[in-house]
Image 1 (cartoon, rainbow, N blue to C red):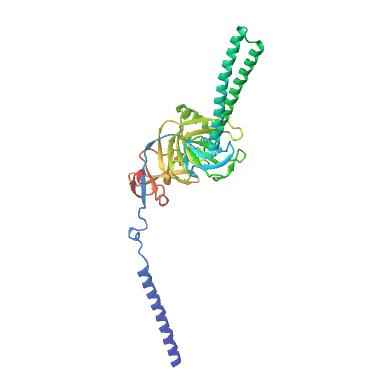
Image 2: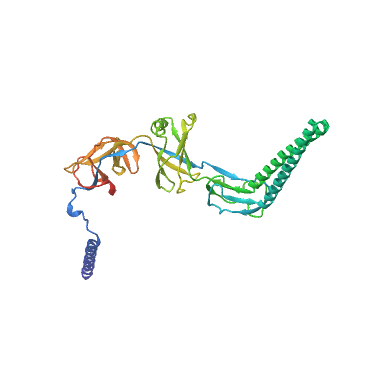
Length: 384
């Protein structure tokens, strides 16, 4: 009997200990668990949403294309004369101006050669003057029968030879001046020069190859292609104004707006791609358009039009298509099936389904349904 009572006491103590641990656990959980702020509002509380009142905006029709930036002029500088490279006058990678001297090849030697050819020309001219006088004297004597025909013929032959010597000396002098001019390699246009392929002191000649390259940066050309359908809008909207007005998105995402200074298009459609190549030149004073890079272009194709646009965050989609949710003055949600147009930045054109003045839900769309009552706060489009 005593053994049975002892076992009962042990079981009873263990049971009390278990219930005590459970009670302490629930107490700690209640103290550590944060209170639900929505609990006081109840399960059926009206959801909170942000809305925007949409209005018509002035928008210019445009075509979106990908453009390839290319230099209008690009040149590889090569020596036209032979000699030791005396000077390299530019900093690699720098901007150079048209006419800047970039390389000098033994200029003093070519200057001396030009001076020699000039002296030869002066000598030939002096000799011609002497022979001309002799010829006129012989001609006068021949008329007076004091000089034979043979003597006159000899004098005339000397005159022709002296005149030919003048032409030869003039040609030699011109060639010497050309070589002297080529002793200085100059920038044919303004642009950015690359790395020098040789260093000072090297012997160079026309067979040496490229010394450096210059690429024009300003203005710059962007080449893009339009489909046979798009080109009609461009011809009617762009080319009639003799310029391309474009928004250019750079590789880093920055957007700049520029108007072309010159443009032209190919004279036929490429039958393989059904596109037409268009070339537009733009000022590039900032140097942000780099030859060889690709940019996104939005090309204006007509006059401004008033259209309805909404924030892209307000657009929902299901198996039936696109929709937007609006809130009435009484706070009731209404679903509208919409037809969308072009994307303009973070907004999109709505062709049908909404009207100016509608309050469109732009945040909290997942918490609402058609006919549900909500609490709405209106924000301005600029605050997005």
